[in-house]
Every structure is written in C-alpha cells, then in structure tokens.
Image (cartoon, rainbow, N blue to C red; front, side, top):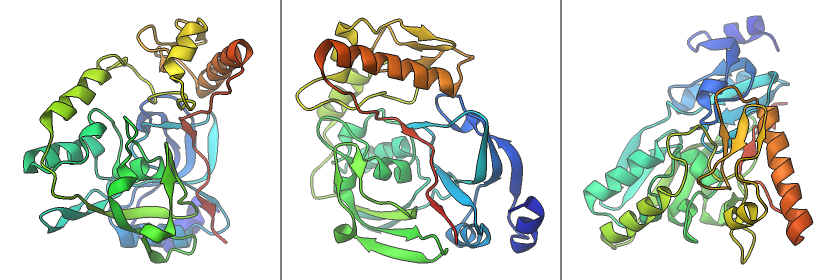
Length: 297
C-alpha cells in the first residue's frame, strides 16, 4: 500500500504519511505511523478499513494504556478520538462513541445523578479503549455496563455485538478482530455515590499525577499488590535511559522527558525480573503494546 493508492479511494478523508504518534500517547514515546487516519464518522471508518488492502491496521484511542513501539509502524494507524458522540436512548441508557472521553462520561453521570462508574474516577482514556481493557478499579470494570456495541470488522462491515458475543474479566475483554465504533451503556437505578467517588479520587492521589505514564505497568497478581511487590523488591527509583520508576508508586514507570519505548520495555523487564527472582511471582503487563487489530485481505 502507498499513499498514492490510498488517496484515490478516500478522496474526502485526510491520510497522513510518516505521522508522529508520541503526542497521542500519555507516555509520550513511540515512533511514526507509515499512514495515519482519524475518521470523523463511522462510515468514514468503514471506508478507511475497506481501502487498506493487504496492510496491518492499528487502532489508537486515548493512548493512556498503550506503548507505541519506536521506529516506523508499518501499515495504517487509525485514531478513533473523533468518534465522540453520545446519544441518550432513555434516562439511563446511552449509545456512546468509541472516542468519547471516559473522564467526561464520569462527569456526565455525576451531573445526572446516575450511579455506577464512581470507581472510574480519575481513569483517563476513551470509552473504546476502556472497554477493550475493561478499565476499572476496586474489582469493578466498565464492561459491566456495556449492553451491546457496534464494531467494524476486517472487511469494513458494521456489525452489532451483544453481551453474549464477548466476555470480560480483570483488565481483559475477549473482543478481537474488530474496531469498536460505539457502545450502548446502561446503568441501573442507583444514584450517584459521591462518597464512593471521593474515595476512589483519594486513592488516585497516591499515584504520580501529572507525570507522563501509561498508568499501572503490571496487573495485580491474585492475592497481591503489584505496587507493593515492586516496592519491596527495591524497584522505586530504578532508571534506564529516560525512563524511571516512580518514587510515589512503584507500579508506575514514567517518562522523564527523553525516554524511548525501548527504555520503558527494558525497565519493565528489569522490574519483573527482580520480583520473580525474589518472590517467584510472575508479573503480567497491564500496559498493552500497539499491535495490529487485523490485516485486511
């Protein structure tokens, strides 16, 4: 695929070449996209996927829980940030675009006195990414409230998926091979719990707010806190290149300003090795590495 091949197929859509991706990541690291597109509508998203023949297709949401590799990302990177509509179907059900901000959704529910997402207080990113990783805290996750979703498959078809078409668990959702376009979210009759919201917001104060990170580096192993394991193994303050482990919370690797994604990976590997050698516990990464959603045939 070349830009000259793409442009005639997408006359009304801007396709950028060699587009820097690090500004789209909360870590602020990563290379360039060989081709980059940011659709304004779902039909545009479908057109882009159909036009991308025989090339890997990557998807970026809010970039808050993703590690973008260094160098050139060969293929087409699609940002869903502009798919940010919200349409209320009734008082407690809404169809929400994949690019809708999760913090804005929490704020909206708070203003409407609709309870359920208090545990999402302070979690960045977009709804599509939050669904793919079942973002949450305190044993809860956003997938609990997903009634159905619309997604674009590898052929550019818009497909409707119900609750029986995917499952989810701790920081995990089984959806794959599709790009989320919108999600129908529904909340029960509970009112907003301000005390619970404040409790989760207070916990966020124990994290390195305002620093460049991708959130927690590792998942919590069953029965353990990854942060405590890392702290007990002396990981706080460890540094490789421009990346270092936060002194505030050991499960956060930060970009000191000039880190590369390779620095982040090497430091994460070092931390995991320390914990494994000391405790026998293998830490699983919570941060996802940008990888192809599918290769269009």
